[in-house]
Image (cartoon, rainbow, N blue to C red; front, side):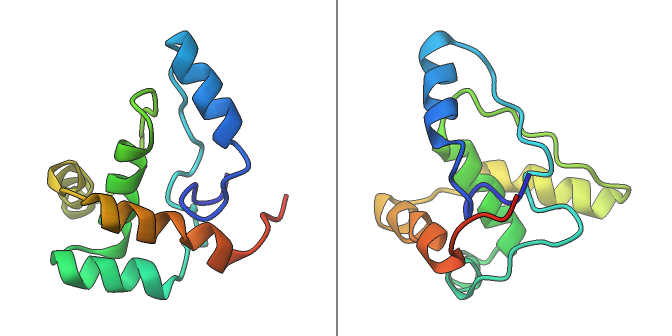
Length: 110
């Protein structure tokens, strides 16, 4: 699974599962070994005093109440960084800006 903020081909599935009260657990929610490089993501992160990956996790948490994130890490520092993403507040304007990353990234490669 590529970073969901950029590749939105599962949007209908996520919405359908949410209506049914079923969790959606994205595989490699941050892109795995090839994380997204996005100027929009970096700009938002800079404004919020966060990392781009924290912003991506925060966006996913805002995306739908049924998304269950399990970002893997071997580092306590990265674990703390991932947990801090839950404290980020994304304004409606910021969410719209992040939603635009999908167009910036182009079609998903399967």
